[in-house]
Amino acid sequence: SQQGEEDPQALSIQEGENATMNCSYKTSINNLQWYRQNSGRGLVHLILIRSNEREKHSGRLRVTLDTSKKSSSLLITASRAADTASYFCATDDAGGTSYGKLTFGQGTILTVHP
Amino acid sequence: SAVISQKPSRDICQRGTSLTIQCQVDSQVTMMFWYRQQPGQSLTLIATANQGSEATYESGFVIDKFPISRPNLTFSTLTVSNMSPEDSSIYLCSATWGYNSPLHFGNGTRLTVT
Image (tube, rainbow over all chains, first blue to last red; front, side, top):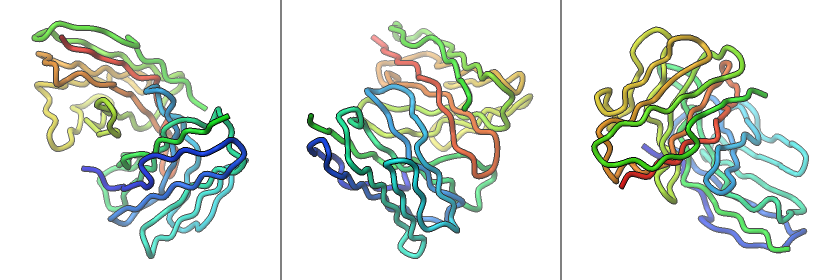
């Protein structure tokens, strides 16, 4: 079953603007991960943030995690047309029988206009 | 990062037939998973491919319909059996090397059943 809910479902911005996507989840987690998918191809891992971390950066990406609110956000700064893709959050749920088994959110479709 | 090769990349199949998808990882991995992504949807976990033993299926997926093999630590197959048009989806192989490590994905197999 789907745990994550993402909003917005779709986001359209101009090149150079920032894009923020939000993810909420329901159960305790080991970590939360963000992925990008271009045109129905395989997913590319962006950032993994552990349950005891609050913020993480990677290049133009910034991820926050609030375990008390069971939510996370992904910020892409100074967006580029090449950032156009679907973005998914995924949780590695705590208490499971194995690790690495991710539950994906519904995704946000980001369109960056040149 | 790991290279995960998945084939075929796409196929068009007749209803009632079966298709086997192969997934090869360029190094030994601990966990391998198979996901399905229906058109315009998020990813749903089909099963965990266990090395040398029967796969662990998620609710709604059964071995007779989606038999999975994992003979060693670098290779797995997923068969979609007795296909119907509802099986038209992207099937994605993924792997991870350890706890709190990201998932790496193959490029997926786009299956169309007519």
